[in-house]
Image (cartoon, rainbow, N blue to C red; front, side, top):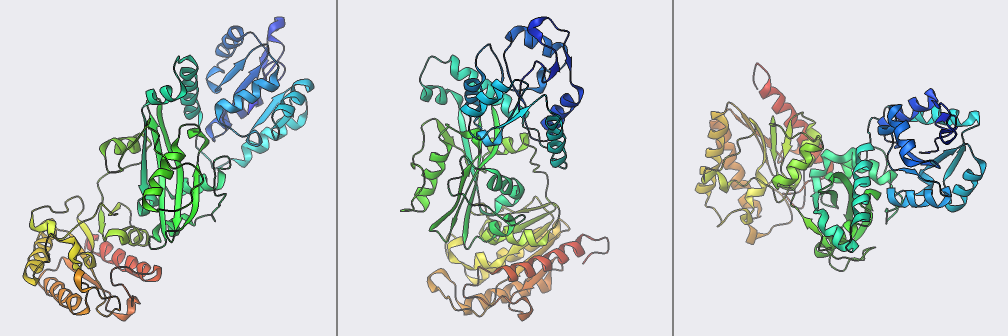
Length: 485
């Protein structure tokens, strides 16, 4: 919302010495809109110092961002204001009491909504807008103040735009695959609201992002976080590639416009999906630093954004299946692995034990694959590791739910140790361990009730993962009850 001041925000004309009086309903609407994600700016023909002093006196100055107060034609001023705020004209309303100003702004900014402050329809519009945002509680004022400071510094900079960007210390992190479950609602909002930098023009159905994200067999997903010396921009981009060939989503918030973020993301995608046609140049701007999601720096960013990362009650350790199992468990306080952040059974023999949760859900099928070991283990070495993990869980008065893979499957890969005979032998080891340790509970996918017949015994379809999740939820809840399992 862009506001005129005289005879719009308040009654009277400041330059004529009037004792101006704010319109109470409009002030209330501005403050409510600020709380609900609609920011308010000013475009007024006034002396900037006098107008600021009056707004401060009335306690209104901090309710606005990007105040443009000059004795200049408003059409061009609003056009520059939209450019600075990185907004599309159709996403903006301009309120003024002067028909000439309204016509001029509409002419220079096609698509903008112009509203005559003298009409009853103005206040009706404000009431309807506030009503339509009931339930939304997400202020963007500080984000625009950060952008305002950045633009001011850029205008004051004597160097080139590239030199200014280099001075900003721009950092970017890409969150992949099921780690994006934590951000599903923000991703959905970004996909369905972004127009200006939505290169694929894709939209999604309400509530569909979690299922889309956990389908890691088909979808590679990336959420984009950006921060710099001015502050945290948050989750400002999303990209998704389907079946390794189709760029389904590639979109960014206007808050990152002209920073080169979309080029940096395209560069990362080009290294993984070689030959894919991308909508922007795939190049890493020298002023952007890529930070890994597991780095403490990025964890600090998430903490500042209010993403809690406290002690978990449950940890799911099943490589790329972990997020789906955790999703279908729907257990509060669950943390899950995600490649390359994965548990390996071999680490237990070196004393590296999973310590952050009492309740562990472990997909044993990963460690049936030789590639997760420095050297293929003998059955005795494998059993020693299983026993060590079981004793560790027992010592913590915890529970270990072990997901055993099916023993009949088509896709045998002897070089990787993926054979029916070996899977059956290692399953027998886990059954022996479970017989000796009450803390070990088995989810045996050889049982037909799970419906997990599969060509690849290390990857499961949605229905199977759902049943696994529900069974693990029941085991964890039983183990965590006062009576125990």
